[in-house]
Image 1 (cartoon, rainbow, N blue to C red):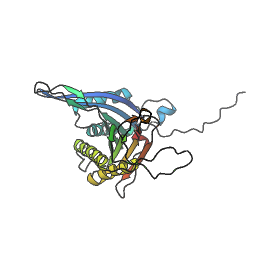
Image 2 (cartoon, one colour):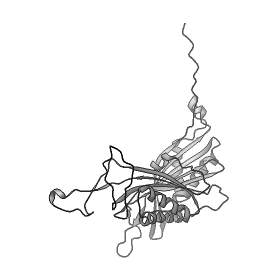
Image 3 (cartoon, rainbow, N blue to C red):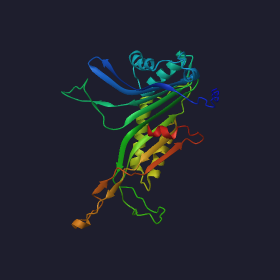
Image 4 (cartoon, rainbow, N blue to C red):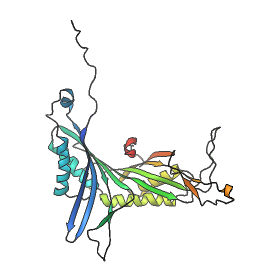
Length: 305
């Protein structure tokens, strides 16, 4: 006689589902002048989803294909004012239209384009910008909003005004102290807005992004840096001090190491002119800068997405 199977002690933990990386390009035609928005939108939904995991019942499941279609339909019906506002429209729709969905998280990457001027016009020709990718994550649970914006792949470099010396040393230390070095990094940054209530006025998303980006770059350029950590804090502090709508900034900054090339075998002096740019291995500097009295809420893994 077969033994009865032992009851499972497994229980379902946190879960979510959705449609990832929906590429949507929206052209707005203003007469002969066109405007372009190019987004990569990922939708994650969570709520009453126990039955589909335990029994396979799809009663509470909005198909992922439907979430994909919603992204494209909303691009037509609502347009794309900004990455953040588009995400807000989508998150509100999914939570308020489906009783089984209690929380929606929308992640957006925006790829920038600039006009190609030709024959004094350039109304409908564009070239992809080769700098950073703009990011946004919008989360809504039916009562409160969380908007985290940011950027990635923004490579910056100071060719001087950087030093690194006085560090701890042991028997394995071979790095020479530097009193004039190149400081370079590829900025991945996320900032969390204090706006959580739809009854309050939301930030001007595009303006806020541009101003924050400007402050970040200016702080990097204007800081005489004794360490990449010092530059990181200066960048975050400047954003917190200059932009009242931001409560938290999280950075992930890999070192883009530049090492002086030894030219002495060729009887040449290298006066901080010729460098070898190494890509691996690299130091990775990460930290959060907060408004005084605020709690850190941006997860560490979000900065690396």
